[in-house]
Image (cartoon, rainbow, N blue to C red; front, side, top):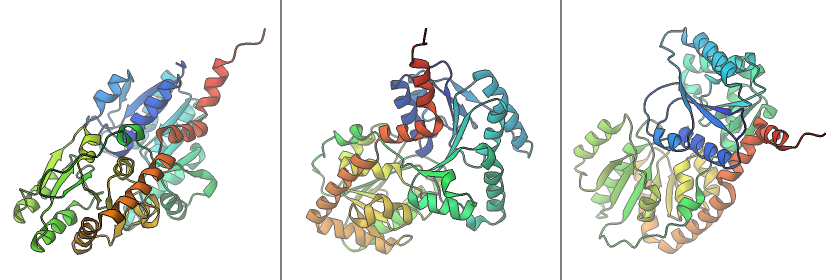
Length: 380
């Protein structure tokens, strides 16, 4: 491997989108002979630590505190770490914080710094967004590229953060397509249709609407079994809602699982109740690769990923009635659902590969140029 690594920065090692992307990138780059190290700004949660450790990737942690001093402290600690590691490039998944990291890295002599944009700019938060935008602006002279996970997010990033098109690039998120495409669909021997969703139990997914949709279907005489796969701070609220609606026999919170391909293969419908701030949805791409019929909310990212509804049924967001109706439509028209899922699988295989994502990121970070330069024999 190259002696000078790429440094990837994460907020934590939670089993969610950005750490999963970092893991995929790290694994791909290692296979190409590149060296990778990891910096985490929070020491909890540590869901994916075993996966990174299995790759032999060094993991660094910062203690930043909670006062305003955490900003200059992050800059200083980034400078010290980059002076010691001498990385070829830095890729920051936290946006906003990337500005402090970029300033420190540049001061330490790092040539390329890029950051990932995975969600809609939170303009509705008022003064909090103003601070966020200020951080993004401060980082502009020190950041080479902002990687936007969809065209939807890129357009919003340019519009709301006030950056130029040339400072951004759309690179779709990816999933391990082979891992999901090779698993065959399992016959449903149960009497109930099996629905499922994968994602952390936090504010990014509208799980309460899904649970209420199940209650509506039950009233209509349609009983389904639902698996919500993931962990997070929203679990107590979801457990309370499930109990209040008497759905404990139908809606199951499975927690974090590592057998996602197998679980997807057992589903009749993958339900993706996203909010409008959703940027891409890695689990959505995984369901597409697995060939599972999809019902998703009609928000910008889902519309783009699902090709305007050609790869999955889109329904009105924030509406339990609309979601229940969409689930009922898919159950009533299995052939139409099969055609959409076949299109979805082909789209996922074409657009959402780890190799394509890693190549695009590596080009902007200058990693392949550095690797090829080191690999060339010296001229006598």
